[in-house]
Image (cartoon, rainbow, N blue to C red; front, side):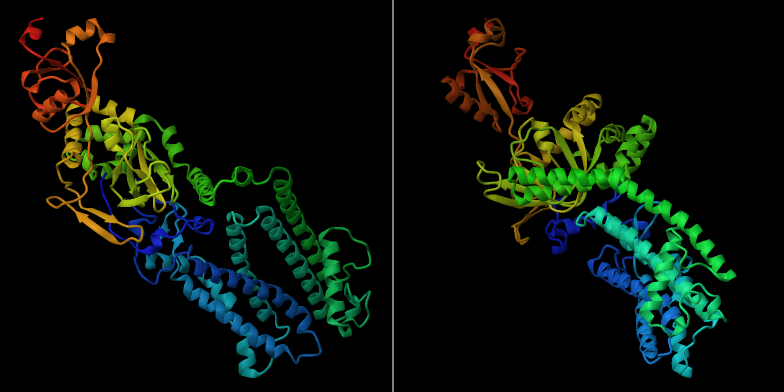
Length: 621
């Protein structure tokens, strides 16, 4: 185990909840953060688009967009045409205040990071952010925010009513509806909200806006026409301009709805050529709207957005499973967090793509992504590039959510894990009867750390529990692939064993700096080479038999041995044998299974069989 980290900010260990899961940014393969260092501006002024405060600001802006885009057509058609103009000044002032908020949003956009559509990475470079905004939607945002009516009212005291250039510029405010589109798209991907309800609300919003806008345009054409009787509403309601605003608006919305639905009851119909042209365009627009509504409703009711709905169904099944079996809340959070990360990782489709590629390309990718990580791991120090490539080709990447056990205490030695990003807590269990009682955090692994290697090398169950502290990207290597690589490259296999023994064996201090923390993140002990500290122990176990190895082969079932832990010296080994087998330690010879005498403790390996011969007569036999 390596790469134990110092205390970090408290934000990195924030409690797990579904709200935070919607803001997680998966780091690219082999990168130690969720951002690309090539695009990193590291400025305090840069705002993350996932920040909660910025999302609240976006929600407020959507409310203002709804207000302006719905009020402007209504004001243009009905309020400006009304004989009562007492309240128009108030609307102009309120509109100027709203435009002020949009001006602040324009300035704020220069300091908001964005996701690169090609790499799906967060760009924080201020110059890149400004250049992207200036070359895309900056001009349209400024044009839709410029307060033409307020400037006219404040300079001349006169409200601009039916001047076509002003009305055309005012239509640019509808550009702000793009913020509403982005808002609904984000809500549809948030599992805290019902997908069906959000989708239906979005469709209803689009339909009502088209009906409202169409009704306002129809009435505006009737108002600006020189002959009231030659209009769609004047032919049915004489002196319609003197009717109440409510009557005017309801008549306009009614005809817009019948036209959009192509019902045509005949009570209202186009009279002049301008109304006929717009009605034709409006009904053609209905073809696209109808296709849009039918297509979306079909997806919702019959098929749904398949992948998202399948994900939602899996979430529902998991929630029912938790409730039915009365599992604790922490397990529910772990299950949902895992399913959310799996859904997002499948969208990136990185590992599946690597598996589909030819072996030569796959190895090249592994060389590019994982080789720099392996060279910084203590276990593979000074190991040849060929061996590292063999190991990297067999590694798999996993994203693990916070507070999930990667390896449990007493778990079998199946995998070795390397930390690419995130933090892993090393947990020691004081009460082994319950893996949630008496837990003590003895260390925190950071990027470049490795765990599980001691159990794999010694073929022993895990001595600690390893739990993710934050969202972590891990490289997983199966023990079978690890040993196959060591058998192919035997010299490097010996070197790897030497690294493990030199760093972790009993009696030798770790060459790595180790920080131990309590559960409140307070440092309680620090140890490194030459200082007192807590060391990892490799327990080598051997079997000893009181007979010659040749005799054991002839009567294998009759010879019973003793399983012992290998000490550090031959003298200690003989003393243990004397106690276990009841023999004289000064009159014995220790042999291996081939009959060769063993005179050094360094020659004995884990799981070896040792044979104790009492005197020279037994040797002759």
